[in-house]
Length: 532
Image (spheres, rainbow, N blue to C red):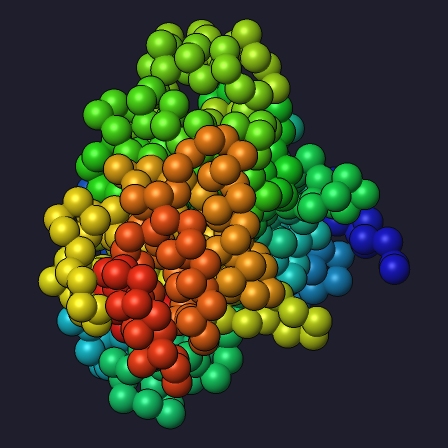
């Protein structure tokens, strides 16, 4: 690869700056600092008005181009005196710039029309969306970023303060700073254009409000941290996010304590958090080990919930990931750390006493995820395969008691119905084939990831037996239908009294007959929850 050109000075003073922003956060502070450092400010439309209202000297873009803004601002910066000022090369284009009266611009500050925010509104119309496609902004950003040997470009208000500090310290922009900002600018434009392309391509084939998968998918992800390693220590890994992750998500979690996280830590933490979110306001605890819940429980308080979840499978809980739907205090953290080795603790918040307790265990990570909305947000998820990416709607469940269809002669009582729903929500997060035994708001045994559903039922019973938890009197949840009656026979032999499953098998009648033969209650949900 050819080394970067050294024709322009290493440090370039900012004598003229063009500011044209949609997001005006930090604009006035930046403009004041640039003015104080002697830079001439040029601006457009609303940005210029903002500066004038703040008594900051500014020159209108039309004064530079000698041509007014036209078409309600659609055309204002698409002019040789703007693009020549950005693209002109030091030592190469000086003569032609003098000939045409083009004065160089050393700094461009641009962020683009809020297309994403506009089309995210449910009431947005086609015309409004189209008007929020920026034309001049991306053109200027590309020009300035291309000419990074002389021009600096800012797209993110978060970079303003460090930029000003560099100007004060160095007397101008350094090559390293300009290259980094140029890369940011091209990434900014790529994200923007990709968003528009995806939105338009979906509507080229469907009604403009159609939720169909777009013919193209442009991913614009930002690396937020490197991870300790991937699934195994010889694999590198990093965490990337799209935009700003929502509160109550693992990607948005604040790491308050502990060592760096690995790929597996994040994957398991995501499963634990999403599972515990299913239980609403009642204190709940979910313990995950190797991608599967190994203990889940409800209780009157968080410590009791953890004790009940831990007792479901103490062996598997060793080195597990534990999630709560309530804040953790110091007493809860001390109780957990005194009894088990834990990799990650997840909760909406940790109080100061909890962080003091965690300081004595520097390897234990604490992730604060903040409060999450009560209603699930519709999202999509991706998984890479060799040569491609699979995209699907996230699996959500809004099942209510009134949605259950009793198909057996025996009708489950109120306590059994509550346990059936509890077990059903756990089964959503267990790798298929998933079988969950539960009683009194906690798991009794979990069978996960088996090739045969009947073997999963046997594994769940074995897990309960290992910790002396009685399956007799418990309920069973299955993430998918039973293809044969053998799963029901195994459940009855273990002592299960009620079953929840999707139904829909060719042999449903045979399976229902087996339930009646064993005097089991059985309900159908009509919804499957495979998790691979």
